[in-house]
Image (cartoon, rainbow, N blue to C red; front, side):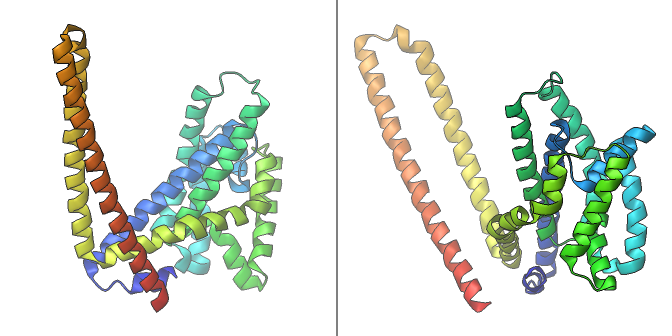
Length: 313
Protein backbone atom coordinates (compact mmCIF):
# COMPACT_ATOMS: atom_id res chain seq x y z
CA UNK A 1 0.00 0.00 0.00
CA UNK A 2 2.76 2.41 0.96
CA UNK A 3 4.67 2.15 -2.26
CA UNK A 4 1.52 2.28 -4.34
CA UNK A 5 0.25 5.44 -2.68
CA UNK A 6 3.68 7.05 -2.84
CA UNK A 7 4.03 6.29 -6.54
CA UNK A 8 0.89 8.33 -7.24
CA UNK A 9 2.73 11.51 -6.19
CA UNK A 10 4.19 12.79 -9.45
CA UNK A 11 5.25 16.28 -8.36
CA UNK A 12 8.89 16.37 -7.11
CA UNK A 13 8.08 18.90 -4.38
CA UNK A 14 5.17 16.71 -3.33
CA UNK A 15 7.49 13.72 -3.05
CA UNK A 16 9.95 15.71 -0.94
CA UNK A 17 7.12 16.84 1.31
CA UNK A 18 5.83 13.25 1.52
CA UNK A 19 9.23 11.89 2.55
CA UNK A 20 9.71 14.73 5.05
CA UNK A 21 6.40 13.94 6.75
CA UNK A 22 7.22 10.23 6.79
CA UNK A 23 10.59 11.01 8.39
CA UNK A 24 8.73 12.99 11.06
CA UNK A 25 6.34 10.04 11.48
CA UNK A 26 9.31 7.67 11.89
CA UNK A 27 11.00 10.00 14.40
CA UNK A 28 7.83 10.17 16.50
CA UNK A 29 7.58 6.40 16.35
CA UNK A 30 11.23 5.97 17.39
CA UNK A 31 10.77 8.38 20.29
CA UNK A 32 7.61 6.63 21.52
CA UNK A 33 9.00 3.10 21.30
CA UNK A 34 12.17 4.24 23.07
CA UNK A 35 10.28 5.97 25.89
CA UNK A 36 8.07 2.89 26.18
CA UNK A 37 11.21 0.78 26.57
CA UNK A 38 12.45 3.23 29.23
CA UNK A 39 9.28 2.56 31.24
CA UNK A 40 9.82 -1.19 30.89
CA UNK A 41 13.48 -0.88 31.88
CA UNK A 42 12.81 1.51 34.76
CA UNK A 43 9.97 -0.65 36.06
CA UNK A 44 12.17 -3.78 35.98
CA UNK A 45 9.52 -5.71 34.03
CA UNK A 46 11.80 -6.66 31.13
CA UNK A 47 12.67 -5.09 27.80
CA UNK A 48 12.60 -6.36 24.18
CA UNK A 49 15.14 -9.17 23.59
CA UNK A 50 17.59 -7.02 21.61
CA UNK A 51 17.51 -4.22 24.18
CA UNK A 52 17.79 -6.71 27.05
CA UNK A 53 20.97 -8.11 25.50
CA UNK A 54 22.42 -4.64 24.98
CA UNK A 55 21.58 -3.56 28.54
CA UNK A 56 23.33 -6.60 30.02
CA UNK A 57 26.37 -6.42 27.75
CA UNK A 58 26.81 -2.66 28.20
CA UNK A 59 26.65 -3.06 31.99
CA UNK A 60 29.24 -5.85 31.93
CA UNK A 61 31.59 -3.77 29.76
CA UNK A 62 30.84 -0.53 31.65
CA UNK A 63 29.80 1.19 28.42
CA UNK A 64 26.81 3.49 28.02
CA UNK A 65 23.77 1.78 26.49
CA UNK A 66 23.61 4.30 23.64
CA UNK A 67 27.22 3.76 22.61
CA UNK A 68 27.06 -0.03 22.89
CA UNK A 69 23.77 -0.37 20.99
CA UNK A 70 25.05 1.90 18.22
CA UNK A 71 28.22 -0.19 17.86
CA UNK A 72 26.25 -3.46 17.86
CA UNK A 73 23.83 -2.03 15.28
CA UNK A 74 26.75 -1.07 13.04
CA UNK A 75 28.00 -4.67 13.07
CA UNK A 76 24.54 -6.01 12.16
CA UNK A 77 24.17 -3.27 9.54
CA UNK A 78 27.31 -4.43 7.72
CA UNK A 79 25.90 -7.96 7.55
CA UNK A 80 22.49 -6.73 6.34
CA UNK A 81 24.10 -4.53 3.67
CA UNK A 82 26.00 -7.54 2.38
CA UNK A 83 22.91 -9.82 2.34
CA UNK A 84 20.09 -7.47 1.31
CA UNK A 85 20.80 -3.74 1.09
CA UNK A 86 17.24 -3.02 -0.13
CA UNK A 87 15.99 -3.19 3.46
CA UNK A 88 18.16 -0.25 4.50
CA UNK A 89 16.90 3.32 4.38
CA UNK A 90 17.02 6.58 6.27
CA UNK A 91 14.69 5.05 8.88
CA UNK A 92 17.34 2.39 9.51
CA UNK A 93 19.94 5.02 10.32
CA UNK A 94 17.57 7.00 12.54
CA UNK A 95 16.64 3.90 14.49
CA UNK A 96 20.15 2.55 15.01
CA UNK A 97 21.53 5.94 16.05
CA UNK A 98 18.71 7.26 18.25
CA UNK A 99 17.00 4.38 20.05
CA UNK A 100 19.83 3.40 22.41
CA UNK A 101 20.49 6.97 23.52
CA UNK A 102 16.81 7.81 24.01
CA UNK A 103 16.36 4.68 26.15
CA UNK A 104 19.49 5.53 28.13
CA UNK A 105 18.50 9.10 28.93
CA UNK A 106 14.83 8.15 29.17
CA UNK A 107 15.76 5.70 31.92
CA UNK A 108 17.60 8.46 33.76
CA UNK A 109 14.47 10.62 33.50
CA UNK A 110 12.34 7.72 34.74
CA UNK A 111 14.58 7.09 37.74
CA UNK A 112 14.54 10.78 38.69
CA UNK A 113 10.77 11.06 38.22
CA UNK A 114 9.28 7.79 39.46
CA UNK A 115 11.80 5.47 41.08
CA UNK A 116 12.43 7.40 44.29
CA UNK A 117 13.24 4.09 46.01
CA UNK A 118 13.72 0.47 45.09
CA UNK A 119 10.50 -0.69 46.76
CA UNK A 120 8.03 0.07 44.02
CA UNK A 121 4.42 -0.79 44.59
CA UNK A 122 2.54 -3.34 42.50
CA UNK A 123 0.39 -0.59 40.99
CA UNK A 124 3.46 1.24 39.65
CA UNK A 125 4.89 -1.98 38.22
CA UNK A 126 1.63 -2.77 36.42
CA UNK A 127 1.53 0.83 35.17
CA UNK A 128 5.06 0.52 33.83
CA UNK A 129 4.17 -2.68 32.00
CA UNK A 130 0.96 -1.32 30.46
CA UNK A 131 2.32 2.12 29.54
CA UNK A 132 5.58 0.66 28.29
CA UNK A 133 3.85 -1.93 26.09
CA UNK A 134 1.38 0.58 24.64
CA UNK A 135 4.08 3.15 23.83
CA UNK A 136 6.48 0.54 22.47
CA UNK A 137 3.95 -1.11 20.14
CA UNK A 138 2.43 2.20 19.04
CA UNK A 139 5.86 3.64 18.27
CA UNK A 140 6.92 0.49 16.45
CA UNK A 141 3.78 0.65 14.31
CA UNK A 142 4.36 4.30 13.35
CA UNK A 143 8.02 3.66 12.61
CA UNK A 144 7.40 0.61 10.43
CA UNK A 145 4.47 2.16 8.54
CA UNK A 146 6.63 5.14 7.59
CA UNK A 147 8.30 2.66 5.21
CA UNK A 148 11.77 4.20 5.32
CA UNK A 149 13.78 1.07 6.02
CA UNK A 150 13.88 -1.31 8.97
CA UNK A 151 16.16 -1.40 11.99
CA UNK A 152 19.22 -3.67 11.55
CA UNK A 153 17.83 -6.11 14.16
CA UNK A 154 14.44 -6.25 12.43
CA UNK A 155 16.09 -7.07 9.10
CA UNK A 156 17.56 -10.34 10.37
CA UNK A 157 14.33 -12.39 10.37
CA UNK A 158 13.13 -11.38 6.87
CA UNK A 159 16.55 -12.17 5.40
CA UNK A 160 16.70 -15.51 7.22
CA UNK A 161 13.16 -16.31 6.10
CA UNK A 162 14.05 -15.63 2.46
CA UNK A 163 17.39 -17.44 2.40
CA UNK A 164 16.47 -20.43 4.58
CA UNK A 165 12.97 -20.80 3.07
CA UNK A 166 11.15 -20.73 6.39
CA UNK A 167 8.18 -18.68 7.55
CA UNK A 168 8.94 -15.16 8.75
CA UNK A 169 7.12 -15.77 12.05
CA UNK A 170 9.26 -18.84 12.71
CA UNK A 171 12.46 -16.98 11.89
CA UNK A 172 11.45 -14.07 14.15
CA UNK A 173 10.61 -16.31 17.11
CA UNK A 174 13.93 -18.16 16.76
CA UNK A 175 15.76 -14.82 16.57
CA UNK A 176 14.03 -13.39 19.65
CA UNK A 177 14.57 -16.59 21.66
CA UNK A 178 18.27 -16.56 20.73
CA UNK A 179 18.64 -12.98 21.95
CA UNK A 180 16.67 -13.75 25.12
CA UNK A 181 19.16 -16.50 25.88
CA UNK A 182 22.02 -14.07 25.21
CA UNK A 183 20.35 -11.53 27.51
CA UNK A 184 20.10 -14.13 30.29
CA UNK A 185 23.76 -15.02 29.87
CA UNK A 186 24.86 -11.38 30.22
CA UNK A 187 22.34 -10.68 33.01
CA UNK A 188 20.30 -8.36 30.83
CA UNK A 189 16.91 -6.82 31.57
CA UNK A 190 14.83 -9.97 31.00
CA UNK A 191 11.34 -10.04 32.49
CA UNK A 192 7.71 -10.69 31.70
CA UNK A 193 7.67 -7.90 29.09
CA UNK A 194 10.54 -9.61 27.22
CA UNK A 195 8.41 -12.71 26.67
CA UNK A 196 5.25 -10.71 25.97
CA UNK A 197 7.00 -8.65 23.30
CA UNK A 198 8.71 -11.68 21.78
CA UNK A 199 5.49 -13.68 21.38
CA UNK A 200 2.47 -11.38 21.66
CA UNK A 201 3.42 -7.84 20.61
CA UNK A 202 2.47 -8.52 16.98
CA UNK A 203 -1.34 -8.32 17.41
CA UNK A 204 -1.06 -5.04 19.32
CA UNK A 205 1.26 -3.53 16.70
CA UNK A 206 -1.18 -4.71 14.03
CA UNK A 207 -4.05 -2.99 15.89
CA UNK A 208 -2.17 0.33 15.95
CA UNK A 209 -1.23 -0.13 12.28
CA UNK A 210 -4.82 -0.65 11.12
CA UNK A 211 -6.48 2.01 13.27
CA UNK A 212 -3.81 4.73 13.43
CA UNK A 213 -0.61 4.32 11.43
CA UNK A 214 -2.04 3.43 8.02
CA UNK A 215 -4.66 6.23 8.14
CA UNK A 216 -1.89 8.68 9.14
CA UNK A 217 0.28 7.50 6.24
CA UNK A 218 -2.65 7.69 3.83
CA UNK A 219 -3.32 11.29 4.88
CA UNK A 220 0.36 12.13 4.43
CA UNK A 221 0.16 10.90 0.83
CA UNK A 222 -3.04 12.87 0.21
CA UNK A 223 -1.59 16.10 1.61
CA UNK A 224 1.66 15.72 -0.33
CA UNK A 225 -0.29 15.00 -3.51
CA UNK A 226 -2.26 18.23 -3.32
CA UNK A 227 -0.05 21.32 -2.93
CA UNK A 228 -3.07 23.62 -3.00
CA UNK A 229 -4.45 21.78 -0.05
CA UNK A 230 -1.14 22.25 1.75
CA UNK A 231 -1.18 25.99 1.18
CA UNK A 232 -4.79 26.29 2.25
CA UNK A 233 -4.14 24.18 5.31
CA UNK A 234 -1.15 26.30 6.29
CA UNK A 235 -3.05 29.53 5.69
CA UNK A 236 -6.05 28.28 7.67
CA UNK A 237 -3.90 27.12 10.57
CA UNK A 238 -2.03 30.43 10.63
CA UNK A 239 -5.25 32.46 10.52
CA UNK A 240 -6.89 30.29 13.16
CA UNK A 241 -3.82 30.58 15.35
CA UNK A 242 -3.72 34.38 15.09
CA UNK A 243 -7.44 34.71 15.82
CA UNK A 244 -7.25 32.25 18.72
CA UNK A 245 -4.20 33.99 20.19
CA UNK A 246 -5.76 37.45 20.00
CA UNK A 247 -9.06 36.19 21.40
CA UNK A 248 -7.41 34.41 24.33
CA UNK A 249 -5.22 37.42 25.12
CA UNK A 250 -8.18 39.81 25.04
CA UNK A 251 -10.32 37.57 27.21
CA UNK A 252 -7.44 37.06 29.63
CA UNK A 253 -6.91 40.81 29.95
CA UNK A 254 -10.63 41.44 30.42
CA UNK A 255 -10.87 38.69 33.04
CA UNK A 256 -7.83 39.99 34.89
CA UNK A 257 -9.18 43.53 34.82
CA UNK A 258 -12.54 42.30 36.09
CA UNK A 259 -10.91 40.43 38.96
CA UNK A 260 -8.96 43.52 39.96
CA UNK A 261 -11.90 45.89 39.71
CA UNK A 262 -14.86 43.77 40.87
CA UNK A 263 -14.61 44.77 44.51
CA UNK A 264 -14.59 48.49 43.60
CA UNK A 265 -17.72 48.44 41.40
CA UNK A 266 -20.88 50.17 42.55
CA UNK A 267 -24.13 48.23 42.19
CA UNK A 268 -24.92 50.06 38.96
CA UNK A 269 -21.42 49.47 37.54
CA UNK A 270 -21.61 45.82 38.55
CA UNK A 271 -24.88 45.43 36.59
CA UNK A 272 -23.25 47.04 33.55
CA UNK A 273 -20.27 44.71 33.77
CA UNK A 274 -22.59 41.72 34.05
CA UNK A 275 -24.33 42.82 30.83
CA UNK A 276 -20.95 43.19 29.09
CA UNK A 277 -19.81 39.78 30.30
CA UNK A 278 -23.09 38.24 29.14
CA UNK A 279 -22.71 39.79 25.67
CA UNK A 280 -19.12 38.56 25.48
CA UNK A 281 -20.28 35.08 26.41
CA UNK A 282 -22.96 35.10 23.72
CA UNK A 283 -20.42 36.36 21.17
CA UNK A 284 -18.00 33.60 22.17
CA UNK A 285 -20.72 30.99 21.79
CA UNK A 286 -21.48 32.25 18.29
CA UNK A 287 -17.78 32.14 17.37
CA UNK A 288 -17.51 28.61 18.72
CA UNK A 289 -20.65 27.54 16.81
CA UNK A 290 -19.26 29.05 13.61
CA UNK A 291 -15.88 27.32 14.04
CA UNK A 292 -17.63 24.03 14.86
CA UNK A 293 -19.73 24.29 11.68
CA UNK A 294 -16.59 25.01 9.63
CA UNK A 295 -14.84 22.02 11.21
CA UNK A 296 -17.81 19.75 10.44
CA UNK A 297 -17.87 20.86 6.80
CA UNK A 298 -14.13 20.23 6.40
CA UNK A 299 -14.43 16.85 8.13
CA UNK A 300 -17.24 15.78 5.80
CA UNK A 301 -15.23 16.88 2.76
CA UNK A 302 -12.20 14.95 4.02
CA UNK A 303 -14.33 11.83 4.54
CA UNK A 304 -15.83 12.18 1.07
CA UNK A 305 -12.37 12.36 -0.52
CA UNK A 306 -11.10 9.38 1.47
CA UNK A 307 -14.15 7.33 0.44
CA UNK A 308 -13.63 8.32 -3.19
CA UNK A 309 -9.95 7.35 -3.04
CA UNK A 310 -10.74 4.00 -1.42
CA UNK A 311 -13.34 3.25 -4.10
CA UNK A 312 -10.78 3.93 -6.86
CA UNK A 313 -8.32 1.55 -5.21
